[in-house]
Image 1 (cartoon, rainbow, N blue to C red):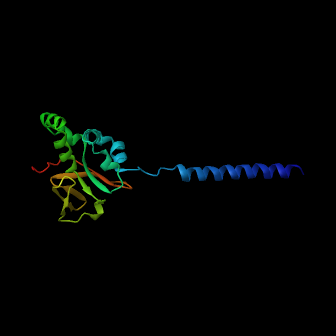
Image 2 (image 1 turned 90 degrees about the vertical axis):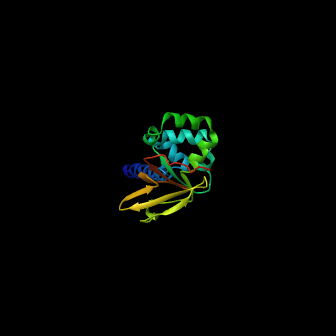
Image 3 (image 1 turned 180 degrees about the horizontal axis):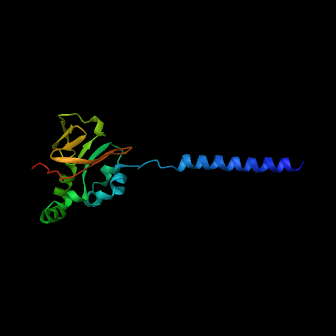
Length: 169
């Protein structure tokens, strides 16, 4: 009966291998993005916004520990901005920073938290944006949220279809 110990050894090895495989999945599974910055960087339609955040020196805001919600214009939204305006922003880092901060609010805002009729939210740039819900649609000023609730431990990203206009100072 030398067959039995070999069978036990094989069964033990197979069981151990399966348990290691399961344990490996638990530790290497998709844990989600680490920061709002990584959400922006990994969202295909936000490549222009991501580049501008970097140019404006706002990466630390998106990767910091303080929660922040970003209403990020899509690449298509930036295509609707006149080239002369984008050129002007490229030459004026303070204006670029102010524009981008007008798309950012402190804290984590989930689309489920937005009320019908809305409420103004204070932006990191010192202005206010009107965020509202009507049916299943969320709007930010005159912009529509096209992709909502992209979460990271330090906040949320909502993709919008227009670039918001920062208030004049």
